[in-house]
Image (cartoon, rainbow, N blue to C red; front, side):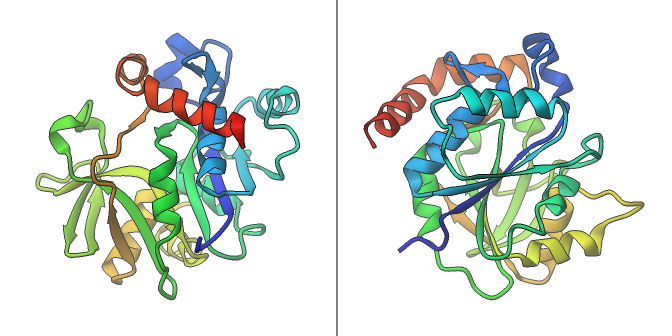
Length: 251
């Protein structure tokens, strides 16, 4: 049984490191295998069992909404949330979803390609009170640009530390989370001068033993932050995304 059928997708950022590829397009509309990144994320989530979406937009939000209205996904229930502070860290984008994310939700990034089975497995995990579960990848030797990845220190099923600059770590953050609304209180607790990152909030939960790790095993994923990451994904993940699109088309 799925914990939730709702996903929150963060799609507000500037995506400056991908601007050579994106040009005037907002990052969620950059194409991977000829399909916008956001479409890959939504299609994969639907295949995993998600039925409703909360999408937080910011930069070039009108282009994202116009794309959706013309896409094959149009008709999918979506609540649009506008973050006019998109120049701030991603924790602020998630905080903007608070008024409409009242129960558990799957949290996804609009620029992370993943296998739908990974999301489906995570959605079957049981959430404890005020808990978040982070999907982590222990296959560190297979991660492209590990220096750029958010690192995770685990002890058993729990995350102890999370951040980009950890010297020692066991796994990488895949950008996929199963959350309770307690994440919003965690972000409030770590905000400074009206700004906070998602990792800051997750570290707060980890320090209170409220952040569990879910090992994705042999599954593959890739965040798309740079042209090099996009090239790597197209060379190594294209068959997984194609399978996802074909499966969604049959549903």
